[in-house]
Image 1 (cartoon, helix red, strand yellow):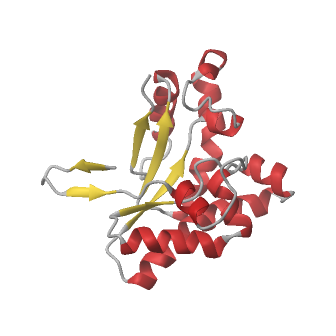
Image 2 (cartoon, one colour):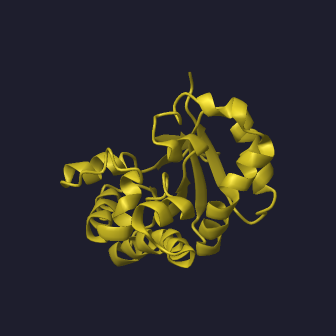
Amino acid sequence: MSYTTKNDKVILIDGGLGTTLHEYGLAILDDPLWSGRTLVNAQEQLVKAHRAFVQAKCDIISTATYQVTVDSLMKHHQLSHEQAEEIIFNSVKIAQNVIDEERAQCSVAGSIGPYGAMLCDGSEFNGWYTDSMTIEKFKDWHRPRLAILARAEPTFIAFETIPSKKEAEALAELLREFPNVKAWLSFNCQ
């Protein structure tokens, strides 16, 4: 994926972290945390994947947090609240360490998937859940992970595959609470 900046430089963003990890032999495609599982028990494969993207000259690499929340880490890995927060925080440090080791000119995007990603039923692609949610509920749900990632200071926050205008509006409002955070939203179009 790429986009053009005002100086017409093409920016390369990593992509397919889950697929890359699957190619490394990790059975993550049916895991409720997807690539986020590597933050708990397969960091060496995650580092290998980040390194591959950096060596491929990506300008931005993403954290493995698309489908990870404090609650999901606590539920699926029996972690304490503090341990789960630390894992999300460290996702930025893992990516940044690879960039530093490679001496690359690369940025880190803290990846945040939509509410539907945690439902583990593909609803992040159809947005069926949005009618039952309010803007405030979306903000309340996204706020904790955004706060943790913002404290870790990635270059950007990447809100990915947002399937509805309502969730996007909630995220835009939520970002006002984090004035120093640079972010983008990508959408899943139907």
